[in-house]
Image 1 (cartoon, rainbow, N blue to C red):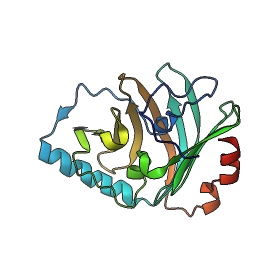
Image 2 (cartoon, rainbow, N blue to C red; image 1 turned 135 degrees about the vertical axis):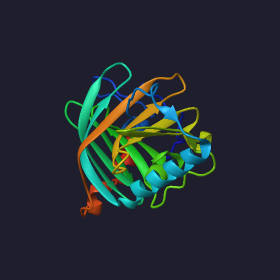
Image 3 (cartoon, helix red, strand yellow; image 1 turned 180 degrees about the vertical axis):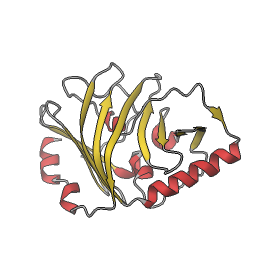
Image 4 (cartoon, one colour; image 1 turned 180 degrees about the horizontal axis):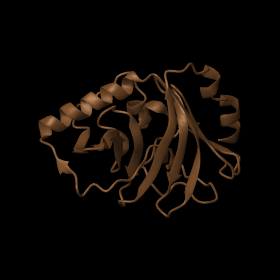
Length: 220
């Protein structure tokens, strides 16, 4: 059964691997000390953000490893796979029982420990923006852009999708390669995901992103 995508909370993944239905956004997170960064003008912000977003969306396939840090200091890790448009898979390492899959239409969060699946329309999640073929940062989605010599930080918000939460994307300013994400919820709590050993441009089998809808419906 499809469910409306809820307001994001960063309190989503505990040491025991538990994840609430708001846990989807913890896949896209990072932390950084932003106080020392100098803001750009609004026009420069939009131009810089769109240039980086266009480069990011030009990367059609991506895979690598991630480490996730929750707001209480809990740590998990695993491997991720991305194929545009709309496809993603996060496999968490043991002892976490979590799996997250997007097949281009829907996103599911599976918990083997609880024997449950939660299903969301992709269009109702922030993944619909980040996994699209072309990322359009118009309509006041860009909240802030800050730069320093080794980091460009873009803060995105869209109440129609993100609610009162924001997503902070962090890129290498020279290569525009994505380094990490941060999600900040309405209570100002952060969850961090750092990515590494990233490869791009490889062929990924569609089976990687397949959702077993019969299993999801029986366990949802």
